[in-house]
Image (spheres, rainbow, N blue to C red):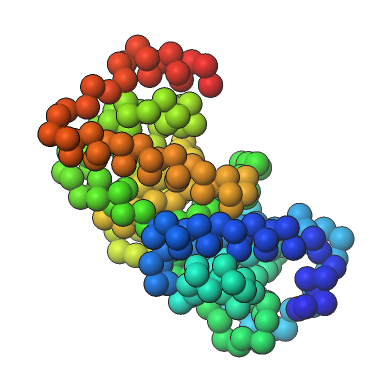
Length: 266
């Protein structure tokens, strides 16, 4: 695999991974082995072919037809962001999805054997399949556990998408500018479940960032840094919200007119 890596322009991606995973760890958004990401790097393999051993093939319960012959770089199960920041390859898997879209090969990136992709694999596949179908410019999916966003979804009032958007848009202008379409919300489902993956995929038909009740958030981006930026802005807004209420006063908030004005400029 090291020979293959030398034949593709993977180093800029690995450098970005090291940078962003270190920030995720420093911010406390990826405690222990929490958090995961996937990047569709199929474009890097257009000029080379990989011989993959038949013995490592795995089957999905369904076909991801828009990911046929695609290569997905994804975090491995149990990997820690703090370790990936130091040395990415041991914490990553490279999945090649075959021409049927129903079988994949887990190509070793280092000497570690029997690595499995993240437990949130189904969510990543559903979103990546959607992005490929739409020929979207976004190729990256990032899931993290920002405490502020999780805390907000523990408040009954904000477990409704309209209420969530109302408060987030009213806190700081950047939210309306960056997310004119709004922010998605998925009620609680078991981690790694098909239900969670399916409901999250539906939200990404409209949104670029989605909050998971009592769990965290998921963002898509043109790069890992771009996906991180989306979460960073949202976390800052929620921080301002909680800080304002901590003073004992109700936040004044942006007016409906001001929010509309911001969205019209995007």
